[in-house]
Image (tube, rainbow, N blue to C red; front, side, top):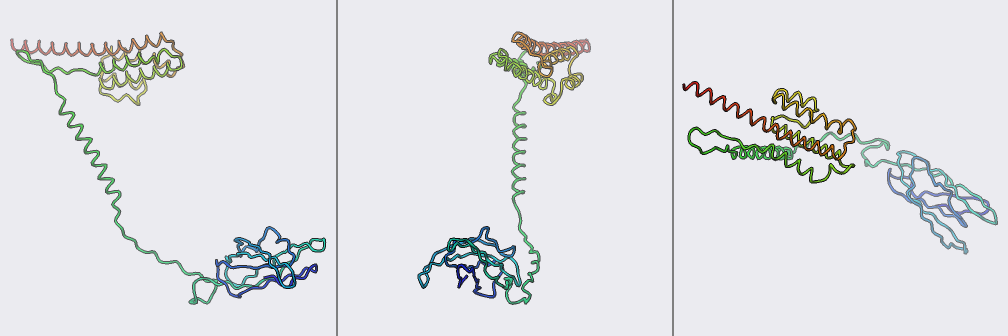
Length: 313
Protein backbone atom coordinates (compact mmCIF):
# COMPACT_ATOMS: atom_id res chain seq x y z
CA UNK A 1 0.00 0.00 0.00
CA UNK A 2 1.40 3.39 -1.02
CA UNK A 3 0.53 5.92 1.67
CA UNK A 4 1.24 9.51 2.78
CA UNK A 5 1.96 10.78 -0.73
CA UNK A 6 2.53 14.52 -0.90
CA UNK A 7 2.19 16.29 -4.25
CA UNK A 8 3.91 17.88 -6.05
CA UNK A 9 6.97 16.92 -3.98
CA UNK A 10 6.67 13.38 -5.31
CA UNK A 11 6.85 11.03 -2.33
CA UNK A 12 5.48 7.50 -2.25
CA UNK A 13 5.86 4.57 0.08
CA UNK A 14 5.04 0.84 -0.27
CA UNK A 15 4.15 -1.26 2.76
CA UNK A 16 4.19 -5.06 2.96
CA UNK A 17 1.48 -6.93 4.81
CA UNK A 18 3.51 -9.98 5.84
CA UNK A 19 7.22 -10.80 5.95
CA UNK A 20 6.74 -14.47 5.07
CA UNK A 21 5.18 -15.87 1.88
CA UNK A 22 5.17 -19.11 -0.10
CA UNK A 23 6.42 -19.80 -3.61
CA UNK A 24 3.85 -19.86 -6.43
CA UNK A 25 1.26 -18.32 -4.12
CA UNK A 26 -1.02 -15.52 -5.32
CA UNK A 27 -0.77 -12.30 -3.30
CA UNK A 28 -2.21 -8.82 -3.47
CA UNK A 29 0.02 -5.76 -3.84
CA UNK A 30 -1.85 -2.51 -3.09
CA UNK A 31 -0.70 0.85 -4.44
CA UNK A 32 -2.57 4.06 -3.57
CA UNK A 33 -1.77 7.68 -4.44
CA UNK A 34 -3.68 10.93 -4.35
CA UNK A 35 -4.38 12.52 -7.74
CA UNK A 36 -2.59 9.64 -9.54
CA UNK A 37 -3.17 9.33 -13.27
CA UNK A 38 -1.71 5.84 -13.67
CA UNK A 39 1.15 3.40 -13.25
CA UNK A 40 3.98 3.29 -15.74
CA UNK A 41 3.69 0.58 -18.36
CA UNK A 42 4.95 -2.04 -18.84
CA UNK A 43 4.40 -2.93 -15.20
CA UNK A 44 7.20 -5.36 -14.28
CA UNK A 45 8.62 -6.57 -10.97
CA UNK A 46 11.61 -8.56 -12.21
CA UNK A 47 12.12 -12.21 -13.06
CA UNK A 48 11.29 -13.49 -9.56
CA UNK A 49 7.73 -12.15 -9.67
CA UNK A 50 4.92 -12.58 -12.17
CA UNK A 51 2.17 -9.98 -12.47
CA UNK A 52 -1.14 -11.69 -13.12
CA UNK A 53 -3.55 -8.74 -13.31
CA UNK A 54 -4.15 -5.19 -12.07
CA UNK A 55 -7.35 -3.63 -10.72
CA UNK A 56 -7.82 0.08 -9.88
CA UNK A 57 -10.45 1.91 -7.85
CA UNK A 58 -11.02 5.55 -6.84
CA UNK A 59 -11.86 6.17 -3.19
CA UNK A 60 -12.86 9.25 -1.22
CA UNK A 61 -10.54 9.80 1.71
CA UNK A 62 -10.77 12.14 4.68
CA UNK A 63 -10.36 15.80 3.88
CA UNK A 64 -12.25 15.52 0.59
CA UNK A 65 -9.34 14.02 -1.34
CA UNK A 66 -9.76 11.33 -4.00
CA UNK A 67 -7.34 8.43 -3.83
CA UNK A 68 -6.81 5.95 -6.65
CA UNK A 69 -5.86 2.50 -5.45
CA UNK A 70 -4.36 -0.32 -7.56
CA UNK A 71 -4.55 -3.95 -6.57
CA UNK A 72 -1.98 -6.10 -8.36
CA UNK A 73 -1.97 -9.91 -8.18
CA UNK A 74 1.64 -11.16 -7.94
CA UNK A 75 3.10 -14.70 -7.96
CA UNK A 76 6.60 -15.37 -6.55
CA UNK A 77 8.57 -18.03 -8.46
CA UNK A 78 11.83 -18.07 -6.48
CA UNK A 79 12.70 -19.12 -2.92
CA UNK A 80 14.61 -17.30 -0.24
CA UNK A 81 15.07 -13.63 0.58
CA UNK A 82 13.80 -11.54 -2.32
CA UNK A 83 13.48 -7.83 -2.91
CA UNK A 84 10.50 -6.49 -4.82
CA UNK A 85 11.65 -3.45 -6.82
CA UNK A 86 10.09 -0.04 -6.42
CA UNK A 87 6.96 0.80 -8.40
CA UNK A 88 6.97 3.87 -10.64
CA UNK A 89 3.83 6.00 -10.27
CA UNK A 90 3.04 8.75 -12.79
CA UNK A 91 0.91 11.80 -11.95
CA UNK A 92 -0.15 15.19 -13.15
CA UNK A 93 -0.44 18.05 -10.66
CA UNK A 94 -0.51 21.84 -10.90
CA UNK A 95 -0.24 21.73 -14.66
CA UNK A 96 2.84 19.54 -14.86
CA UNK A 97 3.50 15.80 -15.06
CA UNK A 98 5.95 13.81 -13.04
CA UNK A 99 6.63 10.41 -11.58
CA UNK A 100 7.74 8.97 -8.26
CA UNK A 101 8.96 5.54 -7.23
CA UNK A 102 7.94 3.62 -4.13
CA UNK A 103 10.42 2.01 -1.79
CA UNK A 104 11.57 -1.56 -2.33
CA UNK A 105 9.98 -4.37 -0.31
CA UNK A 106 11.96 -7.25 1.21
CA UNK A 107 10.21 -10.62 1.27
CA UNK A 108 11.13 -14.12 2.41
CA UNK A 109 9.69 -16.80 0.12
CA UNK A 110 9.60 -20.34 1.51
CA UNK A 111 8.89 -23.64 -0.23
CA UNK A 112 5.77 -25.76 0.11
CA UNK A 113 7.46 -28.81 1.68
CA UNK A 114 6.30 -27.98 5.19
CA UNK A 115 8.33 -27.58 8.36
CA UNK A 116 10.37 -30.77 7.96
CA UNK A 117 13.19 -29.03 6.06
CA UNK A 118 14.76 -25.87 7.40
CA UNK A 119 16.41 -24.85 4.13
CA UNK A 120 13.82 -22.79 2.19
CA UNK A 121 15.54 -23.59 -1.13
CA UNK A 122 15.65 -27.34 -0.61
CA UNK A 123 13.59 -29.43 -2.98
CA UNK A 124 12.06 -32.81 -2.36
CA UNK A 125 13.92 -35.77 -3.90
CA UNK A 126 12.61 -37.83 -6.80
CA UNK A 127 9.92 -40.32 -5.92
CA UNK A 128 11.03 -43.91 -6.57
CA UNK A 129 9.30 -45.60 -9.52
CA UNK A 130 6.06 -47.35 -8.69
CA UNK A 131 5.47 -50.76 -10.19
CA UNK A 132 2.31 -50.90 -12.25
CA UNK A 133 1.18 -54.34 -13.37
CA UNK A 134 -1.81 -54.56 -15.65
CA UNK A 135 -2.64 -57.09 -18.33
CA UNK A 136 -3.38 -55.49 -21.70
CA UNK A 137 -5.86 -57.54 -23.68
CA UNK A 138 -6.00 -55.14 -26.65
CA UNK A 139 -3.42 -56.82 -28.90
CA UNK A 140 -4.78 -60.26 -28.00
CA UNK A 141 -8.21 -59.21 -29.25
CA UNK A 142 -6.64 -57.69 -32.37
CA UNK A 143 -4.76 -60.92 -33.11
CA UNK A 144 -7.93 -62.95 -32.58
CA UNK A 145 -9.90 -60.70 -34.92
CA UNK A 146 -7.21 -60.89 -37.62
CA UNK A 147 -7.08 -64.67 -37.28
CA UNK A 148 -10.85 -64.89 -37.60
CA UNK A 149 -10.82 -62.77 -40.77
CA UNK A 150 -8.03 -64.85 -42.33
CA UNK A 151 -9.80 -68.08 -41.40
CA UNK A 152 -13.06 -66.86 -42.92
CA UNK A 153 -11.28 -65.85 -46.14
CA UNK A 154 -9.57 -69.25 -46.43
CA UNK A 155 -12.85 -71.03 -45.77
CA UNK A 156 -14.60 -68.98 -48.45
CA UNK A 157 -11.91 -69.79 -51.01
CA UNK A 158 -12.10 -73.51 -50.21
CA UNK A 159 -15.88 -73.42 -50.47
CA UNK A 160 -15.80 -71.65 -53.84
CA UNK A 161 -13.18 -74.06 -55.20
CA UNK A 162 -15.28 -77.05 -54.19
CA UNK A 163 -18.31 -75.63 -55.96
CA UNK A 164 -16.46 -75.38 -59.24
CA UNK A 165 -17.29 -78.38 -61.32
CA UNK A 166 -16.21 -79.50 -64.76
CA UNK A 167 -18.97 -79.82 -67.36
CA UNK A 168 -19.04 -83.32 -68.84
CA UNK A 169 -20.67 -84.26 -72.17
CA UNK A 170 -23.13 -87.13 -71.72
CA UNK A 171 -22.27 -89.16 -74.81
CA UNK A 172 -21.71 -92.82 -75.37
CA UNK A 173 -18.25 -94.11 -74.76
CA UNK A 174 -15.40 -92.24 -73.02
CA UNK A 175 -16.42 -88.69 -72.08
CA UNK A 176 -13.81 -85.93 -71.85
CA UNK A 177 -14.32 -83.10 -69.31
CA UNK A 178 -14.58 -79.71 -70.98
CA UNK A 179 -13.86 -76.45 -69.17
CA UNK A 180 -16.07 -73.47 -69.99
CA UNK A 181 -13.70 -70.56 -70.69
CA UNK A 182 -15.14 -67.30 -69.30
CA UNK A 183 -11.87 -65.34 -69.47
CA UNK A 184 -12.19 -64.19 -73.07
CA UNK A 185 -15.91 -63.44 -72.72
CA UNK A 186 -15.28 -61.17 -69.75
CA UNK A 187 -12.51 -59.34 -71.63
CA UNK A 188 -14.76 -58.81 -74.67
CA UNK A 189 -17.54 -57.46 -72.43
CA UNK A 190 -15.18 -54.91 -70.86
CA UNK A 191 -13.90 -53.81 -74.27
CA UNK A 192 -17.48 -53.33 -75.45
CA UNK A 193 -18.20 -51.19 -72.38
CA UNK A 194 -15.21 -48.98 -73.21
CA UNK A 195 -16.51 -48.52 -76.76
CA UNK A 196 -20.02 -47.62 -75.58
CA UNK A 197 -18.74 -45.11 -73.02
CA UNK A 198 -17.45 -42.86 -75.83
CA UNK A 199 -14.16 -42.25 -74.04
CA UNK A 200 -12.21 -42.98 -77.24
CA UNK A 201 -14.14 -40.28 -79.15
CA UNK A 202 -13.25 -37.44 -76.77
CA UNK A 203 -9.84 -35.88 -77.22
CA UNK A 204 -9.38 -35.04 -73.54
CA UNK A 205 -10.33 -38.56 -72.38
CA UNK A 206 -8.79 -40.66 -75.16
CA UNK A 207 -5.62 -41.44 -73.19
CA UNK A 208 -7.79 -42.67 -70.33
CA UNK A 209 -9.50 -45.02 -72.78
CA UNK A 210 -6.10 -46.39 -73.81
CA UNK A 211 -5.25 -47.03 -70.16
CA UNK A 212 -8.55 -48.88 -69.68
CA UNK A 213 -7.89 -51.07 -72.74
CA UNK A 214 -4.38 -51.87 -71.49
CA UNK A 215 -5.82 -52.86 -68.11
CA UNK A 216 -8.36 -55.19 -69.76
CA UNK A 217 -5.73 -56.96 -71.87
CA UNK A 218 -3.31 -57.27 -68.94
CA UNK A 219 -6.06 -58.78 -66.75
CA UNK A 220 -6.96 -61.14 -69.58
CA UNK A 221 -3.36 -62.29 -70.00
CA UNK A 222 -2.91 -62.72 -66.26
CA UNK A 223 -6.05 -64.88 -65.99
CA UNK A 224 -5.26 -66.95 -69.09
CA UNK A 225 -1.60 -67.64 -68.39
CA UNK A 226 -1.78 -67.47 -64.57
CA UNK A 227 0.78 -64.70 -64.12
CA UNK A 228 0.71 -61.44 -62.15
CA UNK A 229 0.71 -58.56 -64.64
CA UNK A 230 -0.24 -55.56 -62.50
CA UNK A 231 3.27 -54.32 -61.62
CA UNK A 232 5.16 -55.58 -64.70
CA UNK A 233 6.47 -53.37 -67.48
CA UNK A 234 5.84 -54.34 -71.08
CA UNK A 235 9.31 -55.88 -71.43
CA UNK A 236 8.96 -57.79 -68.16
CA UNK A 237 5.56 -59.09 -69.24
CA UNK A 238 7.04 -60.27 -72.55
CA UNK A 239 9.75 -62.21 -70.71
CA UNK A 240 7.11 -63.87 -68.54
CA UNK A 241 5.07 -64.84 -71.59
CA UNK A 242 8.10 -66.52 -73.17
CA UNK A 243 7.84 -69.28 -70.57
CA UNK A 244 4.07 -69.87 -70.71
CA UNK A 245 2.68 -68.70 -74.07
CA UNK A 246 3.28 -69.87 -77.64
CA UNK A 247 5.50 -67.64 -79.74
CA UNK A 248 2.71 -66.52 -82.09
CA UNK A 249 0.54 -65.37 -79.19
CA UNK A 250 3.46 -63.62 -77.50
CA UNK A 251 4.36 -61.69 -80.67
CA UNK A 252 0.73 -60.65 -81.11
CA UNK A 253 0.55 -59.37 -77.52
CA UNK A 254 3.88 -57.51 -77.77
CA UNK A 255 2.82 -55.71 -80.96
CA UNK A 256 -0.44 -54.55 -79.40
CA UNK A 257 1.17 -53.36 -76.14
CA UNK A 258 3.94 -51.52 -78.00
CA UNK A 259 1.35 -49.57 -80.00
CA UNK A 260 -0.44 -48.58 -76.77
CA UNK A 261 2.82 -47.56 -75.07
CA UNK A 262 3.36 -44.93 -77.77
CA UNK A 263 0.26 -43.16 -76.46
CA UNK A 264 0.79 -44.01 -72.80
CA UNK A 265 4.47 -43.09 -72.50
CA UNK A 266 5.59 -41.73 -75.87
CA UNK A 267 3.27 -38.73 -75.92
CA UNK A 268 1.56 -39.73 -79.18
CA UNK A 269 -1.83 -38.01 -79.57
CA UNK A 270 -3.94 -40.69 -81.20
CA UNK A 271 -7.01 -39.82 -83.23
CA UNK A 272 -10.46 -41.28 -82.70
CA UNK A 273 -10.01 -43.57 -85.71
CA UNK A 274 -6.66 -44.83 -84.41
CA UNK A 275 -8.16 -45.49 -80.97
CA UNK A 276 -11.05 -47.51 -82.45
CA UNK A 277 -8.59 -49.45 -84.61
CA UNK A 278 -6.61 -50.26 -81.47
CA UNK A 279 -9.83 -51.41 -79.79
CA UNK A 280 -10.60 -53.72 -82.72
CA UNK A 281 -7.07 -55.11 -82.49
CA UNK A 282 -7.66 -55.80 -78.79
CA UNK A 283 -10.80 -57.81 -79.63
CA UNK A 284 -8.90 -59.68 -82.32
CA UNK A 285 -6.10 -60.43 -79.85
CA UNK A 286 -8.54 -61.96 -77.35
CA UNK A 287 -10.36 -64.01 -79.98
CA UNK A 288 -7.18 -65.14 -81.73
CA UNK A 289 -5.36 -66.25 -78.58
CA UNK A 290 -8.48 -68.10 -77.43
CA UNK A 291 -8.79 -69.89 -80.76
CA UNK A 292 -5.08 -70.72 -80.74
CA UNK A 293 -5.39 -72.27 -77.31
CA UNK A 294 -8.50 -74.23 -78.30
CA UNK A 295 -6.77 -75.44 -81.47
CA UNK A 296 -3.72 -76.52 -79.49
CA UNK A 297 -5.96 -78.35 -77.03
CA UNK A 298 -7.81 -80.10 -79.86
CA UNK A 299 -4.52 -81.12 -81.45
CA UNK A 300 -3.34 -82.56 -78.15
CA UNK A 301 -6.56 -84.54 -77.71
CA UNK A 302 -6.33 -85.88 -81.24
CA UNK A 303 -2.73 -86.90 -80.64
CA UNK A 304 -3.71 -88.73 -77.46
CA UNK A 305 -6.49 -90.57 -79.26
CA UNK A 306 -4.14 -91.56 -82.07
CA UNK A 307 -1.58 -92.86 -79.59
CA UNK A 308 -4.21 -94.92 -77.76
CA UNK A 309 -5.51 -96.33 -81.05
CA UNK A 310 -2.02 -97.40 -82.07
CA UNK A 311 -1.46 -99.03 -78.71
CA UNK A 312 -4.77 -100.88 -78.97
CA UNK A 313 -3.91 -102.13 -82.46
